[in-house]
Amino acid sequence: MARRVTGAFGILLASRVFGILRELLISVAFGFSAITDLFYQSTLALTALLTVTNGPFTTAFAARLNQAAERDRLGHVLYYRRFATRVGMVLGGLYALAALVLFIVPGIAPQGGWLALLVLVPGALFLGGVGFWGAVAIALGRVVTSAVLMFLMNGAFVSAVLAVWLLHLPLASWMLPLCYSVGTLVAALWTQRVADSLAASFAPAAPDGGVAGRAAVAAIEPRPLPGLYSSFLYAGSETLVFLFTQFLVVAMATHAGPGWVSGSSLAQRVCFSVNGLIISPYASLLMLDVMRRGGNRHAFLRGVLLALTGLVSLALVLNFAVLPVLQFFAGTRHAMTLAIFSQILPAFSLWMIPLGCNVIVCRVMFGLGLERTYTAVTIGGYLVANALRAIISFKFHMLTIALAAGAVVELGAVLFLITYTARALRHRAAVAVDEPGEEITA
Image 1: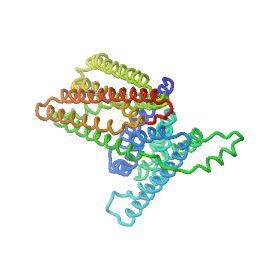
Image 2: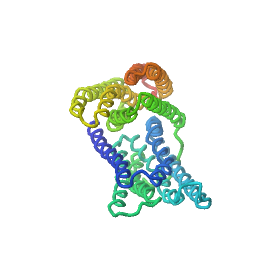
Image 3: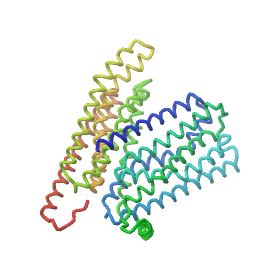
Image 4: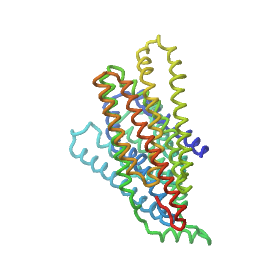
């Protein structure tokens, strides 16, 4: 597990660097203008699709697929591969239709808007498939494969933008959208290369050669996963409440005064990146490990303890190693920025601990079929924490205390879920011992 997490961490880190480099390159090379605004506006639907695919759908799909009988898993993969293809076709068709409308009725969008949408059609067609096979890779525990998809997509996009800049090409309305489609197409081409390998992991063995294997695959009927849509709704609702929490934090930082929104954004990027780089792939592997061990309680508790130790250690490093280094720059022209960042970093580093543990508990509880309890407790924790944050911030004007207080409430909810999951695993183990002849399912 350590090797796979390390490999995924390295690739995800490079992908995040490419993502940040992409934004910096666009701002430095082309500045902020109506053309760059048009690019971000035109890719909003694609960004939303990728966020949903990599978040709630991957959590629900990986959990439900591993709960299904092994003989049925390839049929489920084939069904949702077809579904992802149809989503891409519908999205591509909508982009083409919107481009046609903007071409016929000029003046309702910035100049060249129809062309920007038109060159995004290929990217829209293939994006659903890229996100789907990333979810399949996570379900198989191949986190490196999933990470490579995002790395290739961001890397190809950055390379295309860099080529436009270095060749001194005039920035037309369709240029950046074309770079986006290039990145998606590169990822899609690599997806086609690994899709057969991923699907073969579910295919039945063919003792007499590949012809029989292909015939066996062709005979499999695609079928939907039972309970996937309800699991997706649970995961999606929790994600929406967390997004509301993010908006609340921005409102609190705005209320605190100038510079606090920027300071909060930087501290959040520093702390929350840990979840995406390390905790998320680790949580997926831990979920698979616990399920393949038949719901082993000790494996779950060891995994949570290891993650908790790492998160606390990192929080201490941020506060007792990073902050003292920042003090050397206190006399520079960035003194105000550093002062705000130094005040708010401890609160975000504390918040990082329950959020990281929550990612792990989420994956494991979904894998065990306990998504209803997870969603209810997590949303309840968010609501109580947000109410406390709002009171302390808006009434008493103490932003950092508000963030820390909310983190403590969320930590309490996560600890309750850890205890609940451990007890559920112990109960299932006891039932399995008492009734050895029956199969215990999640």
